[in-house]
Length: 228
Ligand SMILES: O=C(O)[C@@H](CO)OP(=O)(O)O
Image (cartoon, rainbow, N blue to C red; front, side, top):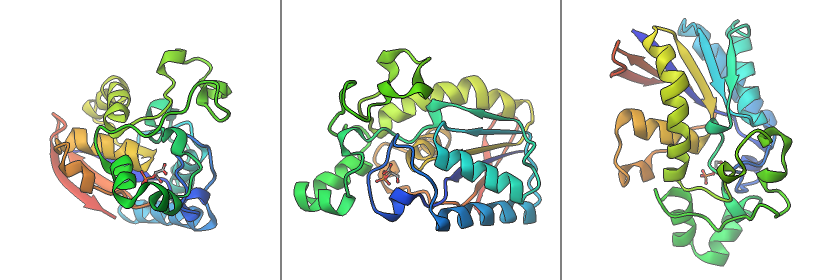
């Protein structure tokens, strides 16, 4: 049996302020750091040992991974960072307050932007201040791959190639894997591996800093799922 663990980063400074975050590289809040360390203690208690770690290129996920691995005495575990595990890009909503946006555009519209499978948020253009096109960490990416805003469908379409090319082969090789990422990149992966419908995925939420542990058989079928 192979173990696959998803962990959404601990609370970020912008989760705390209730701001749309997406690809904006904010830090963990104090509470978020505690959540990440607590996750590590739970992983240790459960005796889960990893062979490979994956995370995004965003600080809040990377730090969550490191705190969790450090607390479980596994900071040495090899890790790969990829933009493909980034949070969904929230386009021109990034930096806006979610409650204020609901007042301005209506609760329903904001819910559709946040949880519909295929409705895009208002987009950011490549020359907008804050576009990822201006950010050195994406310099090697084809500029056409840099999003101006993503829905869950587009997020899934850029996460899955990374799953298929990098993560699934490790699991098939019997390696235990941890993925520290984001609410929506992990919802995309959850949808894919659990075969959740476009409608039902709207109701799936990931708690910050809570490890979700899957046992997978040799064909990567899910044998069990447990939230620590
Ligand atoms: O702002 C974001 O980037 C995400 C995660 O915090 O928000 P939401 O849960 O609304 O998709």
